[in-house]
Image 1 (cartoon, rainbow, N blue to C red):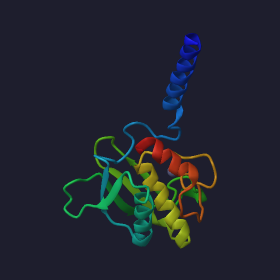
Image 2 (image 1 turned 60 degrees about the vertical axis):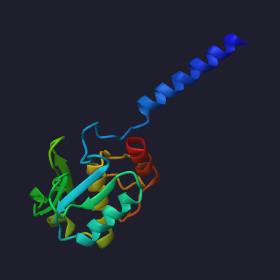
Image 3 (image 1 turned 45 degrees about the vertical axis):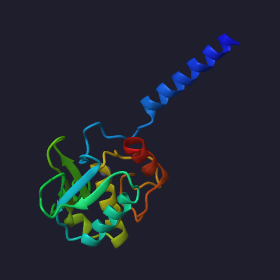
Image 4 (image 1 turned 30 degrees about the horizontal axis):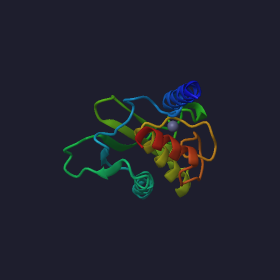
Length: 172
Ligand SMILES: [Zn+2]
């Protein structure tokens, strides 16, 4: 009886360890995000302000991280800006609709490429912005269709199950 208990306990511990190690797939990396103290203070602007508002609302609905505009510029976690960068020689590699980058501890950026976005529908623009904000939350490209973090042009504007799972795994 005691021997069985030890085996069961060992299995439970191993299961717990493996789930902790592997649960956050599609996580960009421990410092690859714009979150500070459970908040993202953003500033800057984009032509697609309605879609940006929708993107902020979408991720705020997850509840753990609060994303809000920083009017005082006291904290510069994330800057949003438009760039105009037509794809070279008819390719659509970069820039795509948007790009999220920046140093780990400094301000991160979301650059919206108006050269690409201008040809998108309203929903496709929203998808692009929700996607880029997802990167600022530390979420990588998700290789499963039906998710906002799945790369490419799409009219999906609501989070997929894996989008939510990865967010929960990273931020709780
Ligand atoms: Zn992406």
